[in-house]
Length: 254
Image (cartoon, rainbow, N blue to C red; front, top):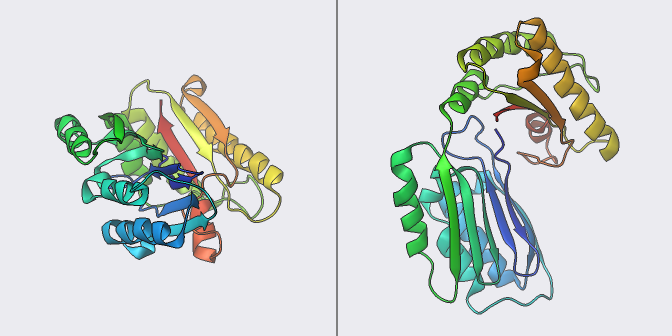
């Protein structure tokens, strides 16, 4: 699972990465980047708050002297509708008049109607490239097994805590249910401490999870690892609860 949700603005760029409805994590959306003025920022944030709730939106937008097409903020806000919650593990990006929406939908019956809906929200000169696909059933099995739980380690180390091994015992059962599908184990940390060390620690933790699962008779060739450090938070690192949520392991069916 991914998800991270992120709005990224760079000049005219706004990027939203979604891991929303139907995913295991009720992750907040991180809105970050640059907008030309406070009014543009507020238009976008107000729409985000109305759709997702203020407690699910982390504002990292910066106001700088950049230019934007006429009606840019309104056009972006127009794309933030409740149906956007149907998109998982995806991204909405707007650069100038070019929009892109990609991600996963739970049901094949929803792909075309959802695509058509978002196309209808776009008016010239804006254009939308939408690429939505069906979320794998195997990923849903893995997500359901993990639920909202965090695989914990001893502080500052890659040694699994007892609570972590208990969850991994359940994950091994779930992995046996998805046949020969390959799975990437992704480690994440909070932003405390040195970024390079966090990157290394996140991979070490992913490797520790892999080794534990191998000992539970999951074939090694099915498992790959990646460490992302603190680069993809799902919560606010300014709070203890947020940091705890960011110290996580994810499993992606590939």
